[in-house]
Image 1: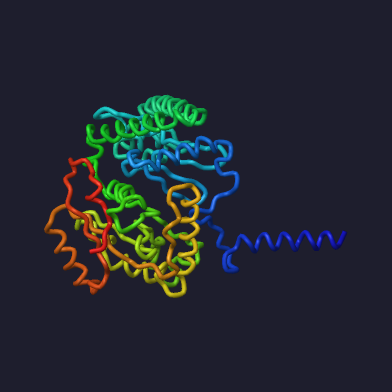
Image 2 (image 1 turned 180 degrees about the vertical axis):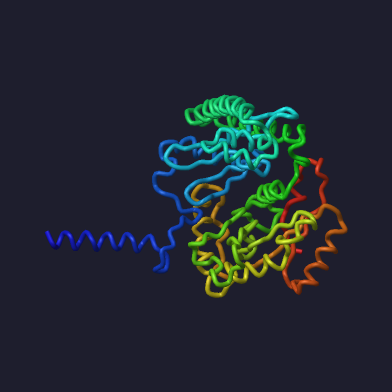
Length: 378
């Protein structure tokens, strides 16, 4: 009995140690690391979704997020795939308000369990008497119930669909999201259909292995460093209350396999305040670009890349070079004058040695063209 207990504690200790990183309690799931039950009961649908996403004309982009996968469209999350049988689509995409109607943020405040405290943060609801609020809450609960019903019906169709039908259903999801984005502009909630996330989305779309005109493969967007990773900025080197860095673009140079960490700037106004260029480079040097930390980051990115190869997103012909990542800026200028102005900013900050990839100027009304978003050495 004693021997069995000792064996149990030994196995338990080994399991615990295996979940720790470098002997520390760093419990986090790197991107590309998924459990064996991931989408296991929906494998046929998952494979069909990934296959369609990987077609050039889908305008969809897949991004791995630890134990789940996001499918992006027009810079926003279209679908979230996770767990054994979980497919998520944001119910908010079915909310198409008219001018003067409540926005979704206020509706969500009204349906919250602690709605009386939540509405105080609303510039509209916070000024209304409680009897009016109660009627608004009743309407909001009915609205959300209707949105959830519509969403669930569409998700269930996708879950039960045959492989050959899935592309058609995904096109319906895309149409729903387009209507939602158009509505945001019509009612004045959104001023432009183009923002940094949309630019990011098209950069990822048009820099793939099959695109011979691009020098890079984009393998990840919006990579948030975990506080529990071995390549985060140590607490004693962070500014007070500062969060860990979020990397805009992670890419591999096709010719060399070199890993790149890229910071996207859409227009010169994105270099102001906390978004300044110097802060981004300093964060890189303290984290994934640090001599003692980049190796751990490289290992996680390599696992991510191998997972993408396993899913058929890439061929595996291009190997990731084991070397410290290179930091680079990507500037999508809003006018031609911003190119020289950005170079001046880098020079002023003593960062003129940092590589910058300049993308062409593009009108917000133009349909995105691949050559406007391709990353090439300059």
